[in-house]
Length: 389
Length: 241
Ligand SMILES: Nc1ncnc2c1ncn2[C@@H]1O[C@H](COP(=O)(O)OP(=O)(O)O)[C@@H](O)[C@H]1O
Ligand SMILES: [Mg+2]
Image (cartoon, rainbow over all chains, first blue to last red; front, top):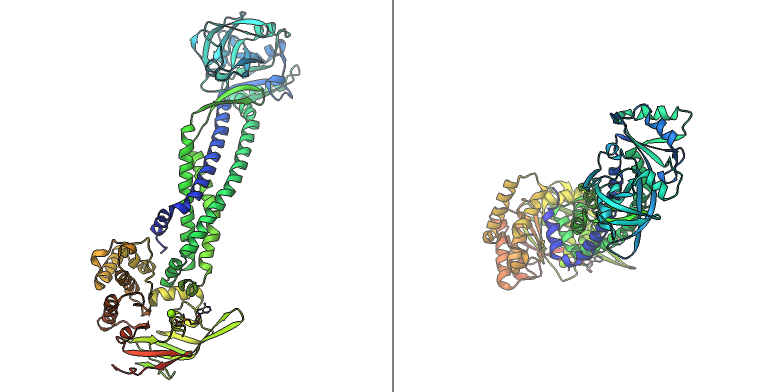
């Protein structure tokens, strides 16, 4: 049987001041690690929520994002009529869209941020069933009217229902507010695509993307085949969720890599703190260790006992680190969407899985910091250690 | 019966032959034990005396399997421990040796009960059986009412009594005591010696003890002197046989 864990727990508690640096080091590292991953997770979740598995987005072939794509009206008609597109009494469920970026002053600071203004088709709410009007009404086709995403209306100076907003050389009336379930659309401003083209003096009847509602999520292949085999079209088709996942990838990867790097650097520091704590524990308790070994506890029992002690210290740090960042869960922040350079609001998302990864990381630091001192604990000859030499 | 001439007939519990121990410290070589012989029967109580630095602790450490001799052999209850690997020596200690140290060597963060229980964790006893053994051992040393105390809450004499309970709780083949009263006042020393004496007389334990203290050594049935690396019989040797 092993050396009882109570031996390690009490030893740590009694010498808590020597463990405090290691505990705080691990706590800080785990806190940063979890916070960065929560940031990446929140950002990704926000973008992915924008898409629906039952929708497909069509862009010009080779266009990485809708910003650099163009689809003419005739092409849009072909797309709408393709196999796999859902339709109702009023026709196919499709929304031809254009996107422009406009700068507005942020409410919190005095700086301006880019807002993604999306011109949509009148049928957009039927295509995107996750979006609904929560105040006011939908815009009237042909009029310079805006509906604001629920994060956009909170974030910018002068965004009020019933008010007017000037941008792109036009004056717009705010007629409604929509909720898009915490997705990226919540940070957008929507209006009639044709009006947007007109005011921005763009060629009319050109869209950047077409989003269609599929008959069912499984209809994607049929839809895709229909479009890619049509010689009149040169487009690429993606499931909407895949499109937004890809859109989120650059930034989430960046945040994650950055998070791992920072955590790694801090982790090295925390490991050294743990090593220091454990080496001094081993040195101070050399006679206790020798006594245990004299009683017949083997070197394996001693090594695992000190590793357990190091893991225990690291676990305290890990739990503290997790508790420290937990209040950030749901905290909304904003960042630049790197594909469109527009402002995007999203929330930190701390999931149980993330916390477990944080604790796992803490234990890893405890292990790395615990093994060398534990091995040293059994390197001293028992007879020598008992003499207290 | 105790012999130091190396001519024991093989029935002895502990048999030491031509034991040599040299320490090397820098360029200096210290020849501490020089061809030492010893036979101790089961149930004997032997005291080793000798000036500081004469090698008493070295001898005890070798007998307890804490250190290896430069040459020579030690056989305990048929096991030639000087031939065991480090790993088997560790489990041999758990089964056969009860150590009592001058400075008690209790684990400070464990209670008296938990300290005494430690050797039993290396046996197959159940938790309930362990509890029974620990309680019995603590009763023998008169500390039933101190089971939940930590070492710092005990007096030196009480600490040594806990250490004695820890030494015999797993019923080892022999007890090795290195100056068990060296850090205690007269009264506590007498109490400790009384307990060790009782372990020999009433419980049939075999005890090998190192002591400076003539009053402590007086309790032993045999007193041997360690001098220039070998054992010599003291004036009292043979008394009580
Ligand atoms: N590990 C060691 N390395 C070198 N010399 C040692 C070591 N252990 C003990 N000695 C020396 O061996 C001699 C005997 O020591 P020891 O057995 O402790 O004697 P005693 O217990 O009789 O006082 C002393 O001179 C001591 O300094
Ligand atoms: Mg000594």
